[in-house]
Length: 294
Image 1 (cartoon, rainbow, N blue to C red):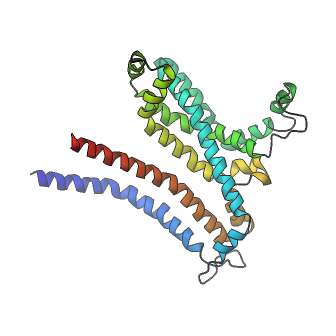
Image 2 (cartoon, helix red, strand yellow):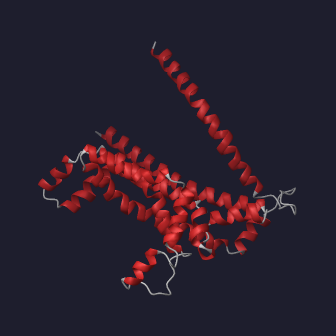
Image 3 (cartoon, rainbow, N blue to C red):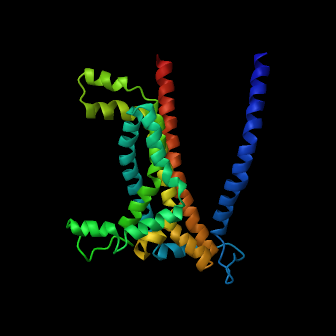
């Protein structure tokens, strides 16, 4: 009887899993494998993919300025992620402590920017960061920057707009975890002698670590592949790997180089995901060993 129930449960799981698994294989796994294969094909003079196999694309990329662009992509993405998490954690903390009616209002304020076109918001930042924009005028007026300083077409401009764009994606998962947190634990920690800051770091943050990990992935992964924001507000000195992929695909028509850069970006995206899965598995194994020891 129990065996039949388990078998039916497995069949049901497979039936519900097959459609999504098929979708992922057809539209994600197979195209990714095709990109990796094209990276080892020669470029066609007419903008296509040549015949045969070669390592010329891989070796030629190492001799160009791609390492600097890849490094710039990594540090801009990491810095954007750190700033987003630094801003999102206290925001989610105070949102979770607000009365229910105010939580919905604050949530609405966070979501409202999504009602506007992504490109319109980026061009709005371009206007604000323009040499004649009000942000520079204010900074010059308070003597924080000089008249010859440039806010636009710099890595700083890219980071500012990236943080603005992806900060909601960091706030929402952390808030979802903080909302379920029992804040009486903070009161208990303070009763036991911990000051507020220590209670925050020792009690609150470990209990919302899944929300923080999710927020890190939701910010880091899209920023690694960003190319619209660097293209509009960054300029030539702020190019990221996404810009080069677009250039090689649509302007230069060099599909093997575009595919190799896409493969590098794919590996860069998979690395943090695999790291998180590895850490979660180790933590789960430690919990199982601790439970069995009891």
